[in-house]
Length: 242
Image (cartoon, rainbow, N blue to C red; front, side, top):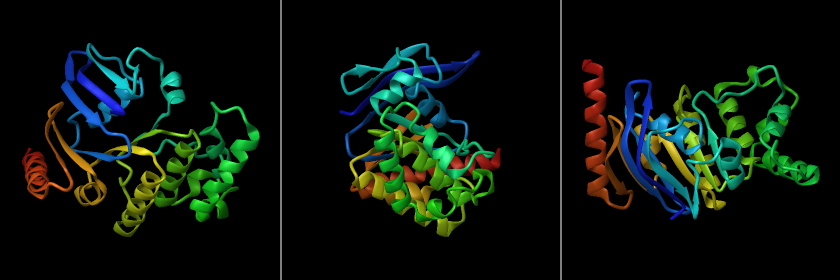
């Protein structure tokens, strides 16, 4: 087991956001969390990254209990998060943003080598390496956010709504990028609102409702996936009615 989340509770003030979430992520898989807005998906990723404290439960990464660690130690273990909204430094160039992803690394030679590998994977970023990141398109900004995360050498990649605001053709390209990263041996925990993207790339899919995991299934379990879709689409319909 790569990641083991045990009965985690998180409050924001008096509001209980996570209500006893338990989740396991196997090494090498793409695990997708589906759910409507404000059910706790992003809070869970932030808890894994050490960005929020919780009042109960524990999180283990391999043999390490990480909920007692500060965020920089969690990153050093190989857990890297791409936050919702990309969070790039707009006035800085593409190359400068990439270098920030390697801030915890020491070997300038290895960093330079990995940046060249990034440019091979993302040729558009190489073309725009001297351009300020705030001038990139939405799809290019998402590529840069992913590329910056890769420079931190992740073992577990946490991705929060990577398809947000992207056109359908760009979402298809994003799916190819994510599955390619996974084939390179990086485990991915993906929070996604886009049902098609999530189901297309998932090895395992879970539905989050009201701060809890309400259902989970392997993508090979077709009946389970269909049931997960019904739960998710039912939540979407209820949200629209409200």
